Image (cartoon, rainbow, N blue to C red; front, side, top):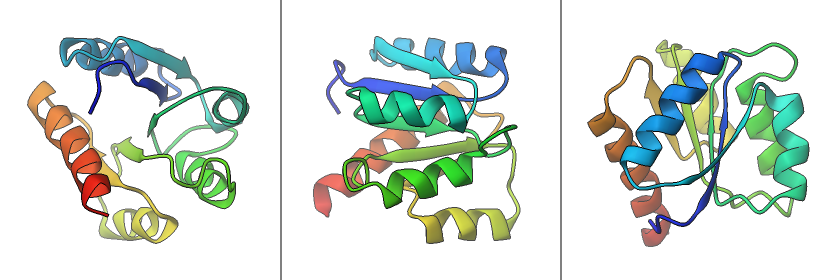
Length: 129
């Protein structure tokens, strides 16, 4: 994955957004924008030039799963790689995210290495597809 890609991080907790942004910067990704929920993120995605979406599941307004579905339903955004980063580890959540078209699913808390592995897997699987 190119380090100059534009990434949108969506999480209702500002501290989590800052943590993910810091970790992405440690991985060399400097173009990171933030949104606090899906209602804020979707217009940004529709009007912006984002290459990758990292979203939480549990958020007020529009939850991450709803954002994922909206992205997949939009012809302009449907190919956008999406990594779900959430505290929801139950199987039914993972299966619902997979059914909605998520590219990767990572459970909080996580390490820098785990984030690197998941990002690499998302983009590695897209290169094969």
